[in-house]
Length: 159
Image (cartoon, one colour):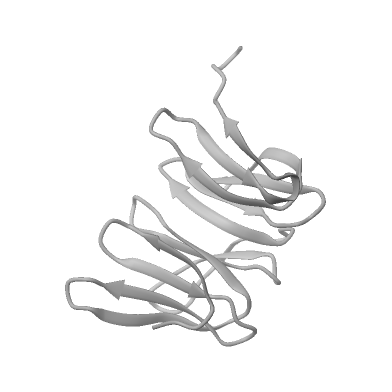
């Protein structure tokens, strides 16, 4: 059970949930084989997204602080990206962590690649929300502020 759960995500086995509360949010992990819920982190402030990655790493964000943390079992979760404009959603692929900003003006879609480098994929968005990777390599991005869904398609290198 969670309070004000903002997002749930899965790594294919565990179900992760994150609570959007001021100062007392939690990062939760549910194990369906044992039906046990583990509190991975507590005392979070406006945590809105959790992203498990194919390599087993786990990221979460605190919207108000504009920070993304990488969860560590020892409790020393490093900040891997800061200075974000109201980050609200993350998804992890083999390329890295994709982040949308839920700001009403000048929001961006970002990629934090596997080497820790930040890439601005799109800018001048209005309240970007969920990003869904498609099997064909494209992405669907919901932009709440303009009531639309964008399909993002990669271009060939050098084209």
